[in-house]
Amino acid sequence: VSMRDMEGLSVVVTAGPTREFMDPVRFISNPSSGKMGYSLAKTAWYRGADVELITGPVSMSSPHGVRVTKVVSALDMMDAAVESMAGCDIMVKAAAVGDYRFTSVSEKKIKRKGTDSVEITMINNPDIAAKLGSIKKPDQTLVGFAAETDNLLSNATEKLNSKGLDLIAANDLTEEGSGFDSETNNVTLLDREGSLKKISGTKEDVADMIWDRVLEIRGKS
Ligand code: PMT
Image (cartoon, rainbow, N blue to C red):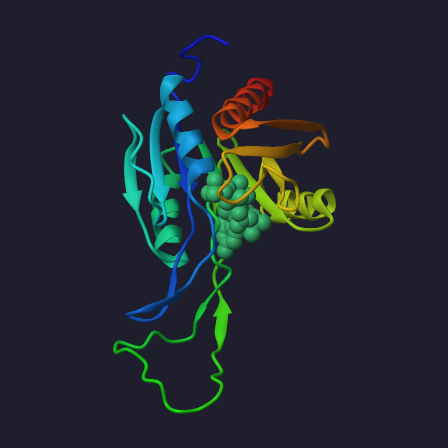
């Protein structure tokens, strides 16, 4: 591939976990480090793209040349992603979005009340990828990930179709050296025509191979 084969393309990548706060000092989240999404942003920039990175709270430093939008909750991420969707050519959803949030967020720290257990209710967060899929224009490419512990390909295919994605990277969380917080990743790329491609390597290698596949798909249409 030529070094700057993404010149002229505007891409948005979401990365990292979201945090759903219960009160000012407690939240529920997940182990996403942001490495996969940051690698996608960095490699796209190297290849000449204009890049925005919408990121949940992670300890990684901002990649050079990339516009960074910091968010905390799934609702924040949704607002940022929807706002950026209209102006981009490619959107990749590598973030691990919390599926649920607390029904209410206490403004004050919730006190320990001397009871042995506590019951909390959570409600569904909106599905950001599905929302983007519904507003996507024909010349835009929407890529998602599927983090799975079982039935990898059937679950990923379901997500590809239900969220209106063009491509999904199915991530088997049970595989060694794959998924959350590892330096490497191992994913199967599934497109709408049913083609399968297994790729693995460092997260930067995997990111480059995802961009290769995205450019191929865009070239066909
Ligand atoms: O950050 P790292 O430590 O490098 O780890 C990388 C990763 C494992 C987080 C990444 O490779 C990955 O798999 N990201 C997707 C994790 C995830 O939330 O998967 P999911 O199967 O729950 O969601 C499917 C897709 O829908 C994803 O593209 C997700 O961003 C999106 N989604 C999910 C829920 C929701 N409410 N809104 C969404 O947009």
